[in-house]
Length: 298
Image 1: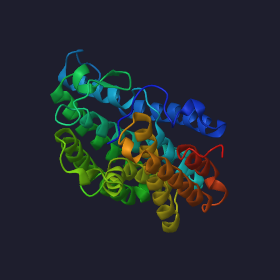
Image 2: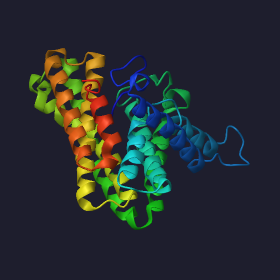
Image 3: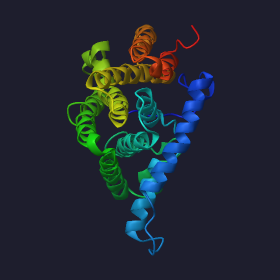
């Protein structure tokens, strides 16, 4: 699960190439509108009613400030294979709801114990810890419900999201990350900080949902299996590059800084090449790969 900090970042939408910046701006409006539609506040309930507070907390988590990169990638992948915007929106909403769930649970006292997310109180601080747990549960449930709208592709999309967000990938990455944080705090197990171990963590906690976003977007667009696999590989490379950029910003693992910079560029180039293989429809995805890899202007 990927922390998102405030301030100027390496992957800064305001400094992105024009086409990428416009893509993100359009995606934020579209995805937020779709999530707003999918999470209506229950009517006829008092402000302090537990059911209303739960939905308010879900909306607080899913509609708060953020880049929406994962959900925007689902839209871009759907468009890249010639899919319809309506199907792409269902895929994008699903990905954003799933991502919001990971952030809510990641912030809990048992995990990172964060008081602030995206410049405002975390859900367990703005509401309470029990509501935060239920909020994450509700968001993940809503993520799978959104995929029903994909019709014939719903089963494949559910399978992808379940696999990528489950114990073998996203949750495994988080478990490894928690263990690494504990080891770092105690000064033990130095082998957990080698570059191979770190990339395994990143593939789970960040790359898995990027890969899911791109493949689910492809499914929404009716992509053939070969294109779906290419999109999944693209998403994984992009997610890893994104996490390396995040670590460079945060100054994490300074002993690996040269490797982080090199690997970020390699993964950005790999993503751009995979997108180019999709043909003309992959042009935007290629631009995104170069941007996240820090090679957009090279």
